[in-house]
Length: 244
Image (cartoon, rainbow, N blue to C red; front, top):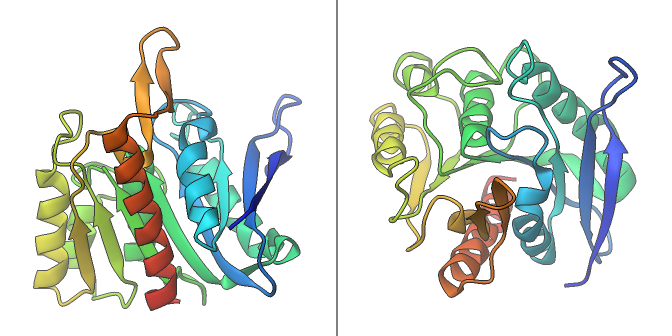
């Protein structure tokens, strides 16, 4: 499906004359589609890292929003993450997305942030209809909530939000047992949860690879990464179809 990309839309109020930006990946589709908010990892303002995955997911019929955010900010990026969520809820309709059919997703540190929101949702009438955590750790404090997702999974009342986890079998940066441990905790509490384990590494699961010259990840053309990224995109689409 053809995809139109609108880049560098501001989504925060100015701080020292600077605003955080996001990219919108819109499928060529008639009528409203499910919206996906996709958070990058612990590098500062690295939305481009997820460009290949976002394009692939939009090609599967999702409106995908990928914001920059700054994990090194004094609040560890919390205000940026929540502002991007507010922007989606307020503005996704203008791009053909349905904010009431939102999949919240993230990679690496963004995965913990996304899962954290889903497990603690309920302070207002809104919650994501599904969450996808990709290559995350869930035994450390989530940037979005200030709480530990694994502890929330074990201690909070069961949430109806389905949690879909994706983790590469060759991930040496964040080993896969982190996702398996969360999966067990969610299922023990009767929460809907699944885990998919592609044959790739930490970056390959989002169709990326680490570039030592750039000092950050970029799009990968390696077969294992392309295959895994396509699988992750399908899981995003399936999460929207089944949960929304």
